Image (cartoon, rainbow, N blue to C red; front, side, top):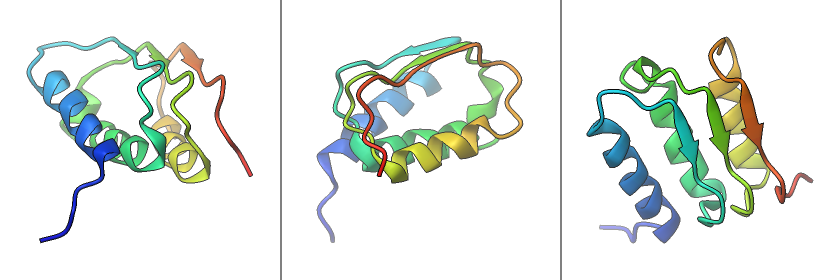
Amino acid sequence: MGVISPFISGAENIVSIIRGRKSVTELLLGNNTLMDDGCEYLFDFLCSEEGRQHEIFGINLVCNKIGDRGLQALSRYLHGNTALRELYLEGVSIT
């Protein structure tokens, strides 16, 4: 069995919290060091049928050391999204 990235582990905790709530409208995740792995895990969930049930109006991903893969995962989530109004990405590393 492979080792689970600590960044995915953190994202799993976030997804677990979201699943445990009836409604989530904002994700304040600044300074959590999700990196690309965690960001991909989180947005894969948010793109799922279960994840799309939450109308999220604001996402703060400031200082999470997110790079190209994480931003690609975010862009998949943004495609067709009409609810999101605020997105904070300060400190991302695009190459």
